[in-house]
Amino acid sequence: MQKKSSNQLWKVLGTSFGVAVTLGGTVGTGILRKPGPIAELLHNPSLIIGLWILVAIYALLGVSCVLELSLSIPKAGAWYGYAERAFGRYVGFIVGLSSWLGTVTALGFGSYTCSEYLAILFPSLQDYVLYCAILILLLLWFFHQMGVVLAGKSQEWLSGIKALALIGFIIICFAHGDGGTWHSSPAAPSGLPLWSGILTALLSIFYAFDGWHTAAYFTEENKDPLKSMPKSMFIGVIVVAVIYILINIGILNTLSWAELSQSKLAAADAMQNILGAQTGRWVTTFLMLSILGILNTQVMFAPRVIYSMSRDGLFFAGAGKVNAQGSPTVATHMTVGLACLFLVSSQSISDRLSDIATFFFVASYLAGFASLLRLRKTEPNLNRPYRVWAYPYLPLLLVMISSLFLAGTLLQNTSSIPFVICFFAISYLVYRFGLTKRV
Image: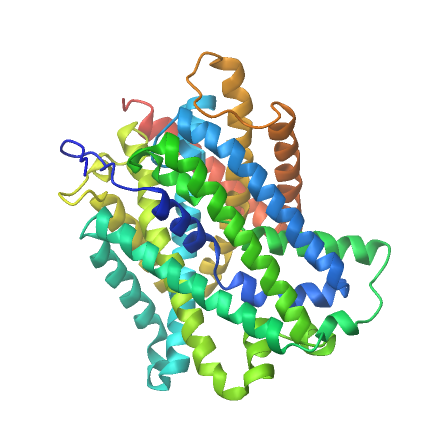
């Protein structure tokens, strides 16, 4: 096992971790919750499956872009490193800070949701949901102080358990479903309601796929990135896409349109329809473990962003410290600490942060694809072990699609626009007067 010298990340991760972190960082409650609202919007099972396939293709094409960037700039932090190299320190600072804050916000919400499911399993905890959420984060923080090797293995186990559970769910739905929505559903809307429904559904599916790029955060820690990164990222995204599409087909095969369109947790309702109400406890347990897998991934990759920023003089110097077990320890303290702070803040503040985080997640994709185009022009001689398919048409297409998603996000959350503007203004002041003199 090759280790770096003092205060550097270890090169100990491989292909199995890359697949696991893609699965763990992508598959969450979205795929279990979204089929109901999407069915209510569109009515048409074939159209629904078509949209899931469409976004899966977007993610698969996105992998080709990210691979060129990650293998030519093998740096922790993914989107931050690409934007900083392509557009300079200020843009890099914006992308890195927004990427980190967005993940920290998601970490807080995820831990709270996980504790809500815990309280369903153990009703005596109902009055202590907030404390349980903080405890979950603290336990993950403690675990990740033990090092990157143990954290990587835990991600492989959690993702493996999640994949097996989802495969079991798919088999049950295919074996016992009676046709459900495929046999009978009302006529699909037409005109403006149809296009509005498609846009809303695409945004929901897009968010369910968020995380397809997660392996890129760990390129610097990969033992042999040129060999394992393409395999792990493509395999990971294909596995996620196949699972998502088969889950949707299974749910549509099990629930009638009347049941599905009113369902807030379609997967649980499908299982109860087949196996009875007693399955609710098992579904709740799976949901809790599924969220825990995502939280484990987020506690791993979010600190890598500010660790990398710190090395470049764009964050607090202490965030660049690596402990004796290969983990960016101070960056992990800051990530978990801020997530806990978000948890204890008022609900209105937390909701607003969540809306802004959604905007910046989409903006990070846009910055990444634009960085690829920019670097091809500014650094034509940069060593590129992997080159994107169909350059420049593919990255240009993804820039256009990501721009449309970004516009759709703003249209859905127009009240967040002033807060986004405030973020840019405050971040510029911090950069201009606090960071420009750091090397």
